Amino acid sequence: MKCACINAAKPSSIWRRGFAALRLVLPVWILAVLPKCPLCVAAYVALGTGIGISLPLASYLRMTLIMICVVSLAWAGWTILRKSFPTATTSTPRL
Image (spheres, helix red, strand yellow):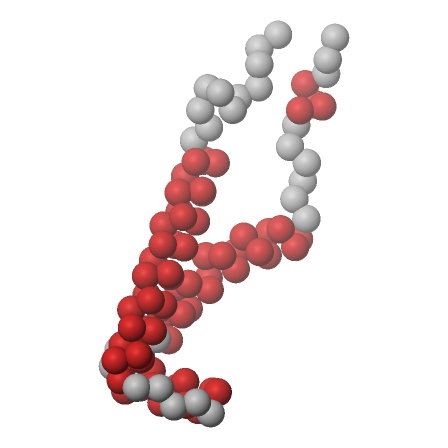
């Protein structure tokens, strides 16, 4: 006879919880700090790296960052919703 506590979830470590929080906070922070004009993006890249980029490249970089942030937020939200509402296949079997 198996004990139900064997299948119980182990408590997560502080590193896992911190990484889970970072997955939500980092895209929101990037979206909040990301400048609206491509000229400012080019200036930030030049200040941060010392490499000058063109305006079209800065525009593509800005749109790519926005898409990456939106996709990662959607994925994190989907993961949270999936864990919040377990399905019948993920529940523990009845004895």
